[in-house]
Length: 530
Image (cartoon, rainbow, N blue to C red; front, top):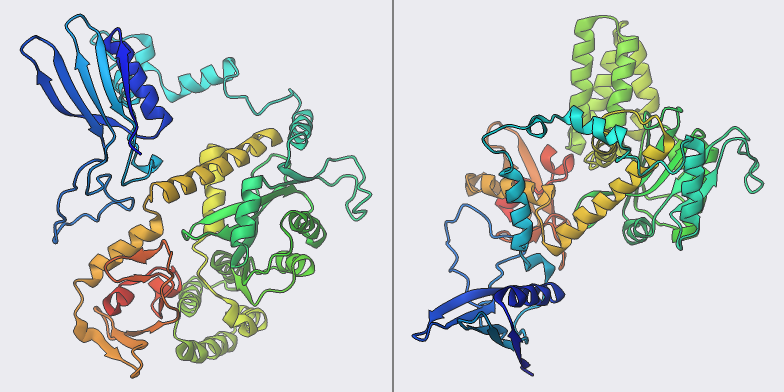
């Protein structure tokens, strides 16, 4: 049913204020389609819904991709409109049709209102010909103001850090559901977990949104790692992270503690389990030490695949090379050999390379110690060096340290907690923008770039390996190497990481090249085959 209404206003300013309220109440905009000046001096202005009309025809050879959210034009007519009659006296009469048809009232297509643009413009144009002291303000001046007037101390609920944290915890516990899943302050005993000593400290944080994300995506890849340097007290921050449907890492729970051993992590995961239930993850990724995985097994159960974080593996290897090998040239050669081993994606080639490299290292007295270490700890775990981690945890910890803590070690615990809560809000906002406005993620940008690269490759480089059309060999463009592309799954019906031109998603194909296996991208070889 089409709804009509008439309005009268004493002035144009009153009309514009009413128009803005209508546009704010229902996410929409009314734009001028026609403006007529009558002979009697009155004026008639026709406003139409901004989504009314037809988008321009697509250009086949356009260089820029269409926006993920699509055009705001609906390729049709929306009946919503305003017919405004302005009289010479200033009075305004409006014939208003409020019914929208042919589209949803989506925030993604709602443009920023002009007053907000004017604020930015006024700020940029504030400097006049005659300079004032304020115009010469530096970042240090702003930091001094924040310090002197305590404008940036919203995290300090008490002057004393311990009391401030205690106040924050009590404040959070009064909110349902509470973000604090477990808290033990120093100097107290824990009757529920006697293994915690009085001098131990532990704070577990998981908001309702984090709980929902963990419940939703905790059945696939779960990552767990700790980082130092986020407080002045020597506590470690342990993060439980999942990979969402956009291919991004999302932190789902935090634990700040000085008991980062098996006991502490088992307690932390027990409280997580009490909120989410048992999580049956397919892949568990952590450092090479057994602390996190042993705690996960005790609380949640074993996972089909145990994944070592590439960054931790490389760091462990480089540390051993530095300690065990004294000759500089042999250090360099050994590092190069193990990196090539780590990035080898062909199983048969890897099977031949591993014993050969280990034997070569053991036979040389200068590298024998490292060779024995490699054989003892990694020869049996070679299938666990899965590398589709994309450094989610490192990226998240980097954001926390360099953005939310401004590159400094927080001297106060309450500042670290405040930074964590801001980090979660930012991650939720980024995800909301990506879902609602269909913003390009880094994965989609990489996917599109590789599709463009594949257009320059020749189809002569493709050779089918079977008659089933599910496996192909693609010869490299700059060497004699070849890569195998195969179909693992059918395209997901609602996958957000898909290529429109290829009509395939990231999960349909796999390739043995480094870009696919290690970086987990839809590589140029896959685009060429698809």
